[in-house]
Length: 311
Image (cartoon, rainbow, N blue to C red):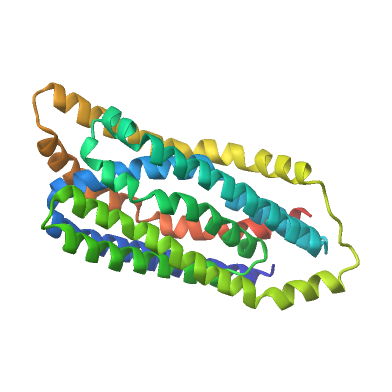
């Protein structure tokens, strides 16, 4: 990957990340005005659990997939790079299925333990996203490893757009029923956004099919590994990254647990606690996380560059 391509890739992802962060920050304002800080206090605890499950199930895998695909492509082993994608797609489906089934079965006791029982519906609304986002990460890893950042950027922007539009519409529709239901409607936007992003990136993948076949047919260095070997390599790369990526969402859950449970012991009602927690999570966390858009973009673009140089 040339220096120019690296700069372009980082710029494309950086711009997409900036748009996503700006949209997310702007979205919080009307959503908070609609459901109030109490509603945000029901909305955010569900995302804390969701973010941890995503971190555990896939945080390191997109990077691992991208690195392995980039390595195969640098050696001219295009058939091997496609095999990595195929194996990773199966792994991601299994991880997504396990996460989504876990929440379907244990959402109620999990939220009761967290002291946020009113966030139960919000967590259930994220079940489809838990299944779909891991699949989405496989395709993003494929394009990242192939040094094609545009499909990733487009899918990220449309995922956020649909998350916001659908989430706000459902929250607006359901707020008359109750804040718990409105918060669940807002979180369900993430599930719809992930579906749209998956469809979009799959379209990019299908459009690239001819090029993929051409690369495989024209290469004289195509080699296949055993599935076990690929899985072991992916895990070796992904596990350390996953451990590091799990710390922040884990701390969010710890904060959630102590805020809700300790304040409950002091005599505050869940509604009052949710209101106070919503003041923290509704705006402060959004501003704190804003700079990550740029660092993430540079990191994603660097993976194939470093791999090419190493190989």
